Length: 208
Ligand code: ADP
Image (tube, rainbow, N blue to C red; front, side):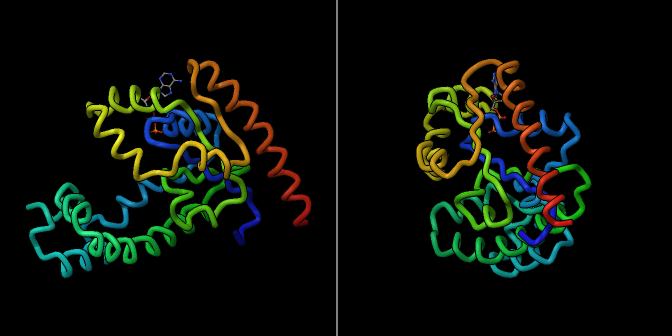
């Protein structure tokens, strides 16, 4: 990454606790760029990407109010791999550019890029360090199904599209173990925050 600021990439499987951890870092004053939010922003009405999606899939891909019909799009790309490829080759570079733009505006001591697909896409190339939020598959299923009102099978099918727990952890520089309660989570966040402040500081000094 060409910026002089430390950028930490935060990832984890569905229900691992990414959003909770992000809000803890945000409470410590750290700027968080959320790749999921960016992915929604780039297809908002008026954006060039939405126009291209409409020309490709037809007007039926939009809701009456002009917004993208996400569940329709999801159904198409789930059953048609070539359409999934088309969509990804359109959106990934646009999302990447917007993530870079948002990261460059960060003013905190270091910045976090949170993305469920950090390691599955090229987004990991934007970060200096990888933080994985890890929990058991059983807890992932329990927490995600309670949160989303989905059944176990639906959560498991999403987990299958993501990296395995083992492969994800193997690529981590840091791991937060989210098997306990929120106070245990906070202790780990606080320790990492201190580490990242030190790393950010030494990066700044070596660039001076
Ligand atoms: P992700 O963003 O990785 O999908 P979330 O941060 O939304 O996961 O966490 C999934 C659900 O589990 C949320 O409802 C969250 O409040 C809950 N949760 C996360 N960590 C804990 C924890 N340590 N103890 C209790 N509930 C938790």
